[in-house]
Length: 158
Figure (tube, rainbow, N blue to C red):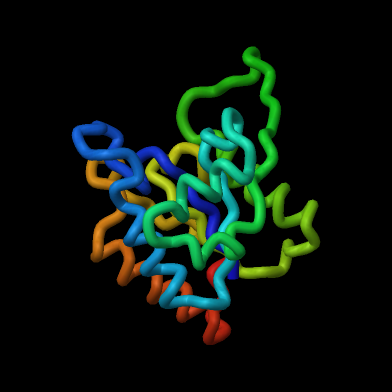
């Protein structure tokens, strides 16, 4: 199984009253509970930082043993400014699908962990929606691990 990871609103609350990546230990908890899961960066940070820098951000301070589990980043889907339509646009969902296709993994179960529902189709079974005001919580971790385990048991998320 693959998880696609957003940063802002997931690994730290959107209101940065706390340190950046304050929720990293919760991401590490997910990955350690599911050793068969690999992660792909879907965060907009991928447009600014190199892949090795992204891995450094999410593994420093206790997650270094997980570095090999971060296997790439989604491609940026260019969109003409004139085609922007407010509301649901499924942009990030499409970037995840494109990554899966380009890497020969289109038949693998996957889950995006994000705080913006508008960049996925409405009621997407592939989206785990995090409250951006809090970032990941222990309750989110338990629910994500449960969904991963269901997918591993053959219950298709896709």
